[in-house]
Image (cartoon, rainbow, N blue to C red; front, side):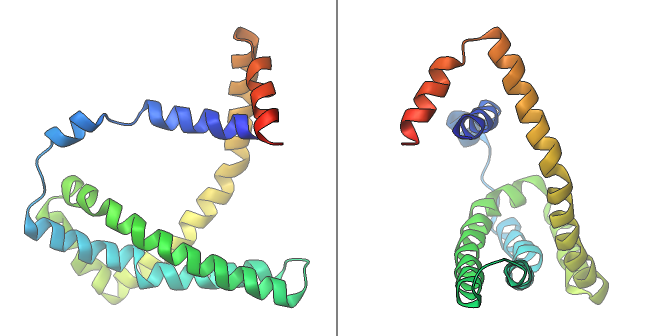
Length: 168
């Protein structure tokens, strides 16, 4: 399992831009950042936290463990995810302001403030979960296939030994 995690991390890092390339990009202006904040709050703020809380409560309600433990997991995982979401939205602020123009952000903010926009945002969250659930088995197959091909070409026994030792 650690090999899979290491492989996925290395694939993700290989495509990451260098720090120098990131510094070369112009910083978003104050209006763009303010609109990015509004967009992130509307799409990933309280609505997402409420969705996640309900999702975890429902998920753990079906878990085969004592109620006290299910409740502990639901509460603590929700609280931990709240902290992750706050940090993630802070990390995405500049990206949002960079990717979207101020006009696009203003349009998105207006949309997500409307009743239909709030409905779309809620349904987008549900679709995201469904997409992740649908993708998970395919990603597992992809990683297994890549690892098999990699190990046919390269010696994986050293990696397996290192992973086994670090797991002890």
